[in-house]
Length: 291
Ligand code: DO4
Ligand code: MG
Image (cartoon, rainbow, N blue to C red; front, side, top):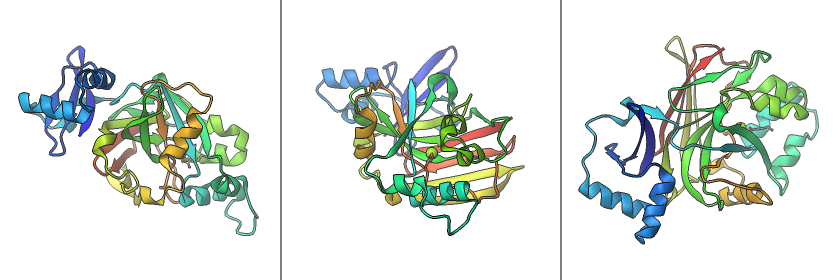
């Protein structure tokens, strides 16, 4: 069971999307109101949605044809880094220029360390939703999307749902100096989430999800790669436990869990590219690139 937010005239619609892709508008304002109603009625959110659906009528629309918004208003987005071997290799390429004998880098150290890399990624104002435009930085010539499984957390740090995130990154700025990381990661429209959130209680195994990345240029696929969350070096709870340590979380804080997909080293995004990221049973997050 997934949840979406969409533009409905001058209002925001909130709906459940079943595994058969039927859309059922819900009475609640958002996922938090739904969770509170479920608690009051002594049901899990999934049980409550199923009971609403038995009484309800589906929209006569494909969910992808709605004016989809970010499925959750995330006040903050955080991200973990170098959680997959593929990311470690890509970071090492950035700092060494591909030299095989460059020795151990800080990325090798963080991949094996007890403490994961966790960094601040985005705020509500910088994050775009499905169909929105992600921006290129004007001072970088090596930019890529990073497709990542996103954890939707409540204020207590529980993983209540999963979503898809794009951690847009500047590989040249990141590789030049690790202290430039915030500039390589955070700028206007450098983060995207959506198109839906999938309830954690309806996701039996988050360690076996296929992640696919396709980038279209003039309607031709110039990147088409995929991987599986089974390759994640860390446990999801482990990442959350470091994020919440001595920190304040909010209902809707999103934690991106790191990328397992990196386009070839000679690839950089260009204006008008279309990025599509899919994760099994969540959907496809589509964004267009603008300068
Ligand atoms: O240290 C660089 C960040 C790496 C990252 O964002 C990732 O692995 O997804
Ligand atoms: Mg990343």
